[in-house]
Amino acid sequence: MSPAEKVTALPAVSHGRTMKVFVRDLVLPCRIGVYGHEKHADQRVRINLELSCHEHPAINDDHHNVVCYAEVVEGIRGLLSDGHINLVETLAERIAAMCLEDHRIIGAKVRVEKLDVMPEASAVGIEIERQRR
Image (cartoon, rainbow, N blue to C red):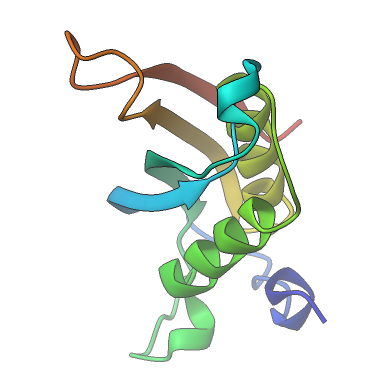
């Protein structure tokens, strides 16, 4: 059962309040890239997320009433373990889609950076924003 399936529906009234859940500077090994030398070795990617979430009207210090960043990070690890990805754009889209599976998340800003590509730059990458439809 996915984290989103474990969560019960929000009460009918959420008072329109939102909160941001974020993950900053998550660096993980990833098989990513279109060039031959990128297909046979891991590269470091840095991932930053900002998730706009409906705020539960009664959090009550209960972790079940909030989006769990640890579960989000585990989901990202799972995506990276699925095999080679050609484009950082594809990885960003997959991360955003995974996050939006949780009905409490209404928007996702995802930045994916490759850290070891160009010696003249600290990183290259992409940032996307996706909203729940």
